[in-house]
Length: 103
Image 1 (cartoon, rainbow, N blue to C red):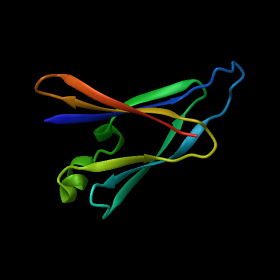
Image 2: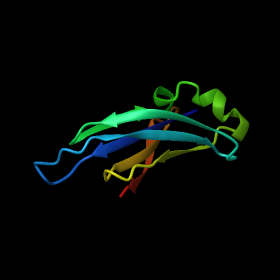
Image 3: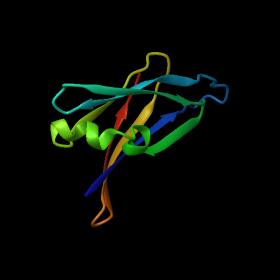
Image 4: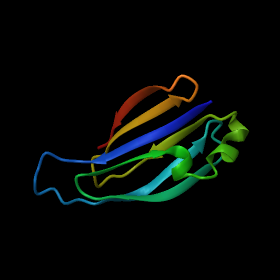
């Protein structure tokens, strides 16, 4: 069994950075047949690190149609978001991760 996590950071090197990240994020079924969406807000210099199942409580049932595979889409044109996607192997408690940048 596995657990998927996503980290999103709204950061800047400027002390005066004051841009709020507020947008919709999407969970898209791996076969592209459907998607879920939700609003997410991250304050300036703030971050969130959440399980996909916590962001989208219906994720497990929703992804059954695509054999558990899906994609998270984060799209915002007003802020530069730093993100990381993590997969935790619950048997071995190991984590694999990959980063992505917005802009």
